[in-house]
Image 1 (cartoon, rainbow, N blue to C red):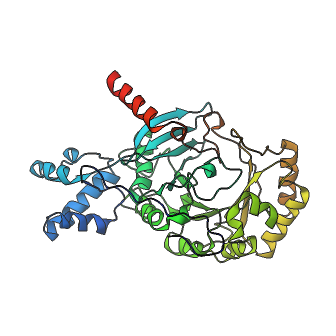
Image 2: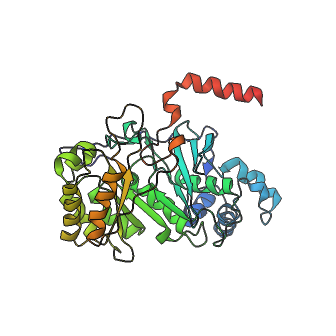
Image 3: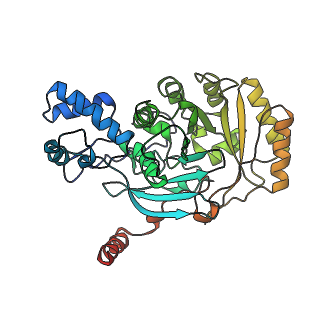
Length: 393
């Protein structure tokens, strides 16, 4: 629902279209919701409680995608479950692998909406960048994703489904805490997570559940462009690490490149960061800062950033992001020398300011580049391609 005010970039998101077959997707439901859903379908309470526990284990620990593989549930009940429910995954429309090992998936929901996710492997971790909306509403001028229109919010199941699909692709079933390639999640894909708060919260609750996907909240980071009224709730109800897309330290520049600043200004945003539950030197807030040539990259900008972080006494880390170009952009990336000088000023003030190594640029998977290739194709063309693939198969 739009937040009232003189500047509100949030249109009304389209409602989710129910599945054509009428079945209910069980992925993304909480344990209580799963039990209640089974009971509403006709199972008596005791049996619904038992079946919910069994199905939960098969979905999140074994990676099951159909009921016939659930060997501790009577075979006679498999058809009953299959007729009423589904264990969903987003459809993979296209999968790409960058020269640096980054993977990007173009995904499609059951109602035909397209979104993307990215997996970034490193020597000591593997990070999945998860989308929260189809499109985006914030119109950040340096961000390719921000040029898309918001279509709708992703459901909790579609958010969890991205993690499930990545686990499928990485061969990480049965689920176990040791030896995982997928170790971290960042809610930094398409969309503004705090404008889809309930679904993001519910999805991450499943991801963090010790009996579910069992990722620690310390390994999950939620990024926001500064939806101030929701930040305290995010800290209290989700409790994961916070990243803030700051990108500028003066009102005129941030008003231009992050239009949400016209509603929630820098001072209001930084005070919300100072009030964020759980933020401390062990769990610093990350400030994302894209480096734009002659726009936000001067020594004065760096000094003002230091002043602001000190003024609000923020336990902070600054991620400096070399701008990733995309067709039609009006911006250029700061030079390596300018980025180093900017970083040095912040480091000398005792604040960590690493320069993020661009990943996946060759497949448009880098920060700010996500924009579904499908948007550039007509629906008729997509249908023709799908028909051709089906004929070839």
